[in-house]
Length: 332
Image (cartoon, rainbow, N blue to C red; front, side):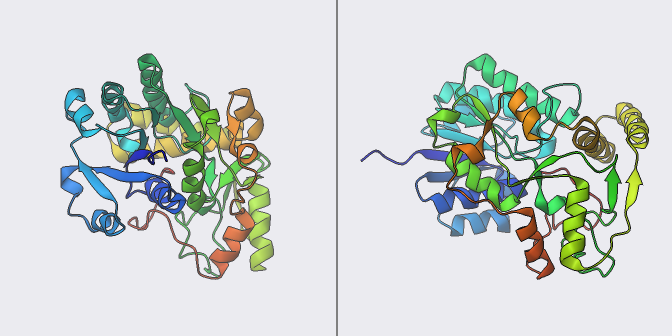
C-alpha cells in the first residue's frame, strides 16, 4: 500500500489556511505538517494545531533557499496560504522547493478571477510568484475560489447580522449591481483544496471552486427575502468608483509601504475588477483556461450562499478576521 503524501501547509492559522487545514485533516489521507515562524511557535493558535496531532516545521522565511530546502526535505506537496502582505517572500520558498524536489506546489491564490497583470496589484504580486514557479519548471496548481460568502452580504437595519458583518458600511452597491460574481463559502476552500491536490488532472493547471454565481442585486434580494427587511442601499457609480480608485492609487504611490493605504488600494481594485470589469465570473475563468472544480468533482455539494445566510440569521455564522474591530480586509 503506497504511503500517504506528506503535505506542508504555510499560513495554517489564517482564515484561508484554517479552512485548508480542516479540509486536509477531514480527508484523512495525508500526512500533514505545518510550517511556522520561530516567533509563532508559542502562540495559542499554533498550540491548538499541535493538539490536533499536526507536527510543526519551524523556520524563518527570510532564511536562504538552501536553508529552507533542508526544512522542506521529505515533503511531497507544499501549500501556501501566506499573509497577503508577504506574497513575494514565496519566491525564495519556491526556489527551495525546487532544490528539495517537491512534487507539487500550491502558491497562495484563493481569490477572485482576475487578469494576470495590470488590474489588481495584489494579483500582480502573486503573478510574480507564479512566474518564478514556471521559470523553475516546478509542478504546480493554482486555486481560486471567487469571493467568500462571509464577505458578500450586507447588514440589515435590525442589526441581526452585525455580529458577522466585517464591513459595517456593507450596504454599498457598485455600478448597477448586475455584474455576476463567483462566490464560495470559506469553509469549502479546504474541501476543494483537498480534492484538487490529489488529482493528476489539475497538475500544472489553474482551477477555480465555487458555489454560486450571483450579482450584488441578487445577494441583497436573498438577504431581504430571508430577513423580511428592506435594505437601504447606497449606490456608487462606476465613474465614482474609478475616481475613488485613482485617488487611492495616488495615495498609495506616495508611500507604497503604508499598510493602510495599501489595503485601501487593494480593496478598491478588487471592487473595480468584480463590479466594473466583470472579471470574477465563469466565462472569464474559462477564457483564462481555468478548470471548473464543480465539473471535476460533481459528487461534492458546496455550501450555497442562501444556506450560509440561513445559518447567519440563526446566529451560527463566524465573522472572518475576528481580531479586527472595524474596517475591511482583503480576502485571504
